[in-house]
Amino acid sequence: MGVTVGTPPGGETSLSIGMLAEAAGVSVKTVRYYSDQGLLPGAQRSAGGHRRYGTAALARLRQLRGLRALGLSLPTAGEVAAGELALDRALADQRAELARQLTELRWREAALAALADHPEELLTLGEALRAAPGLDVLATFWRRVLPVRLPTGLKSAIVDVVLPELPAEPTPRQALAYARLHALGSDRKLAAAARPPAGKDTRSLTLTYQGTSEAYRLALAELARGAEPGPGEALDAYVAAFARGAGRVDDAAFRRELATFEPTHPVISRYWQLVRVLHPGPTMGDAHDWISAALRLAS
Image (cartoon, rainbow, N blue to C red):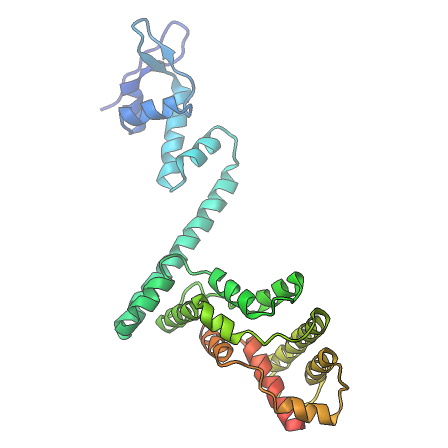
């Protein structure tokens, strides 16, 4: 059934609140709420004190209804309808939010599949996926592991490169690896155990970590091209970093000594083992293993 509207002497269509609600396909309660929130053009009052709306209110209400049906929040829909927010910007934001939600759902689906195969991991999976997967816990873990006296900027740069990239469509195996990684990263005792012993001054620490970061970058390039461990820039940068930090000379004796030293703590080894499940390409852990192998071969 259509809605018959009245036309006052001024020529503007006049709709009661009930007529407006029926024409827009919403409830009277919705019209009243939107009107009270200032989302509709101001209503006139009839001689009897009842609200009357024009065609602009009907157009605005239909626009709001359409935007809300597509998932936009009421405040955002109101800004778009009022011309305060560009439609393309609002739609881009909404698509980004939907992508985030879909990723979170895929992680939950993968976690459920992982739990079906590993029911003993219930608490680990449940704790890790109480919220959307993220890297904050792992970033905090590395800040606890790295030496306290390391300069803040250098520490942040290192944290940035050791964090894995989380897949948008994880497999059950990846969901389980993430949960185990989250548990490892949440354990303060493990971080404390993996922290290198104190002893070096700030300058020596900075020189060592800056140099090894560059060495790992060079080793990743070698890994990317499929090179076997061996002499070259990556190994030289690694040895030079430790030599500078220790106030030593990079010679054959120092390289033999360095080759017998295994700086990777079991907790860190476990971290990289789990990251390899999440990360499709070579990791910083792989770069360290490549350099260690090159050092042993050269010594």
